[in-house]
Image (cartoon, rainbow, N blue to C red; front, top):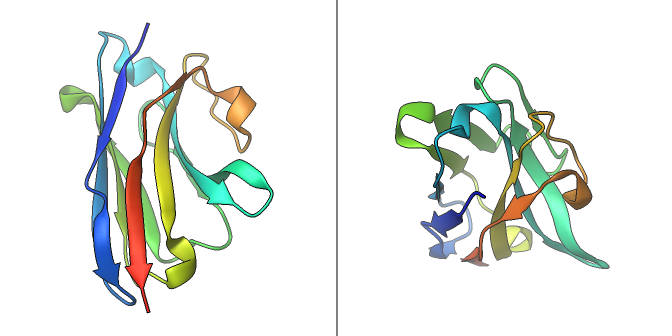
Length: 124
């Protein structure tokens, strides 16, 4: 069982930055692929970014490429999402997710554990 706790959300003006964190419990954190998701029209949770267990492989939604960076610190059981050049359309609750198979993916059903989410509001 893995418990995930997100933090770092808040209110920011368009063009600003935020850094989200997701702290995980468990001793096998480095074996999990991690992902970030947020709501989108017609989708409860839409893919934002994913990172492999050793941090060597990352992937991003087209809408955030070049603006967001996912990273992880396995010594601290934490994954991060650095968000720059924020836009109003980035507003939403951001969820952290863990895939115990270590494969990650673009779909929510590929992940086994979820946090409660942290809200991000970008004002224009």
